[in-house]
Length: 305
Image (cartoon, rainbow, N blue to C red):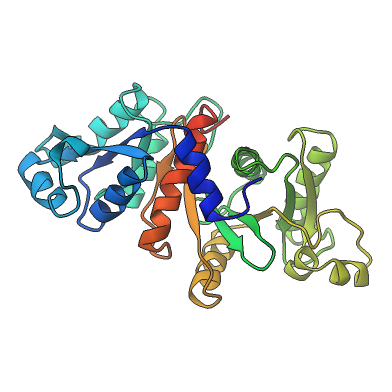
């Protein structure tokens, strides 16, 4: 089982280099990609104006042979070519590059030209190391879904479970978070949590333990759960925190990084090929870990499982 970012990097290296397609990369991308290339994780493929890309890459890549450039001078065609390359097997991983996140996510969901398998759904999974416990936790969805319905939460959980298993967590323990730990018809998130928990009992998620609704103190502390009359194998030993909506997920991830000084890395899951976003709360060094996570998803087959 992987217990640190170093474990993720080592596991990804064993899988060999993956081809990463980056549409119109920005200057900050090149040092990250050069580091990932030097680590044996990827071989980058840049799409855009060849002259501009060579000039930008020159400061990070000593040799032009370390990367590939696909010439495309029409800004409207860059993303389409990147998607086609990954979709058709000419690339393994898609990175956001200089494309706006909203445009990228919209394109990913396109049923004809995107990377969304039939019946699938995308979500963003953030991974955090708990240094004192030598443990990795996953929080989802931390970027994509504003107000996910029950079916979307089912897919979000499925995506996170797949990544957790690729990280060596054989029976992931999930806390489905809500404002309170009791099922209350007036709070829809508690109803969704209870249904997901029952679905897990009936093995609709395979080998997994899912408990909800749980408020944050019950999820974190077995003592708090017992004080409130809850008995669960999840409390105090959570692998995956499933949040009710984007306000909770995005703010929680940012608070852990900016206030709690925790490290994080994340990846888009649920697509036919892994996708990496450029999120503001991920440090440059941890963007390399994100590339390693994407490499693990490649090893697991389709990112949607």
